[in-house]
Image (cartoon, rainbow, N blue to C red; front, side):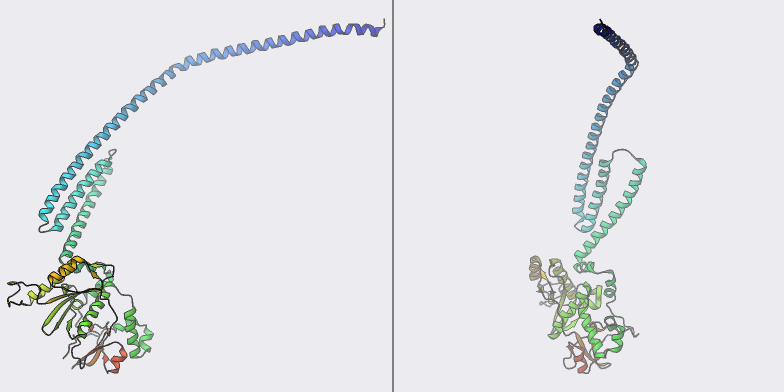
Length: 440
């Protein structure tokens, strides 16, 4: 037997012994790991039990705190509900009080309204507003704030006083406008327009004033154009310029007056000359023993004339009759035997229309109405003759224009252009302010 053959026969047995040894080693290693893991797990369980034992009292306290918070929440919900019911009760009490006070004020207002309706309304609004403010403060109050509340009360007191004064003045104005409807027209006048209204009664000073034609001309135009050209250009610009409501009303009165003068009436431009003192009488016209009191309203077409304007015109016509001792057909004073219609005829001219109610009252009171008579350009240059000044003409922006009357058809007339006046040998009045011009 050779050595190689002997080695081949021994090799499987050795390999078997080595494999068994390796398996035993792996099992031993696995057992050691398992023992180590077990003791680690056991240690963690012990430590967890100790930690639970230590924290359990705190957990018990948290449960108690949650239950306490739940009880507190229920308690506060009850408080809020009670507070809401209390506020609702207070609100109902104040509503009842406000309603009772309103009724009392209404009864007082009805009594006061017999003589002073604006005063009654002012009382009613003031006290109702005061109570309503107090009720509103109670409704909105959530938490007390003494300092802020004191400040609010201080401001509220001042505001209530301002509100009271505002309402009293507003009702006073409404009361006056009911008595004198023409006052309502001045609401539309801008502040800068009040000056010509207040100074419409011309000055009688002999002091020379700048030519009013300069308002419509540049300095170069006034100096370089001929007399006829510059005055005609100023007149054209007068008609085309933008005007205030007061200026439009003034031009409308002049236009209506021109129509009457053309028919031979003697016209006094009472409203323009007297200003605030006209008592609603814009024009006074007379012819052949007849007298008419005319009120003019140049309003936008969408506006409507109401009955208060008819009442005001009738009232101012009656005052005119009484102040001048005009008598009726019976020969007695109107105070002794009032008659309708009045012996002096009231006439209402307007660019718009009247309400149905205003028309009915106009018929009953004998007021003649001319509706939708619009303002139009007309021969507005007044050619006048006086012994002192001779033949002179006045343009619409001259201060003596509205005091000048066209009466004698032989020497006086209306013309449309400056060229016409110049061709008739009239010269423009050179004194812009002076004594009223009258016909000899």
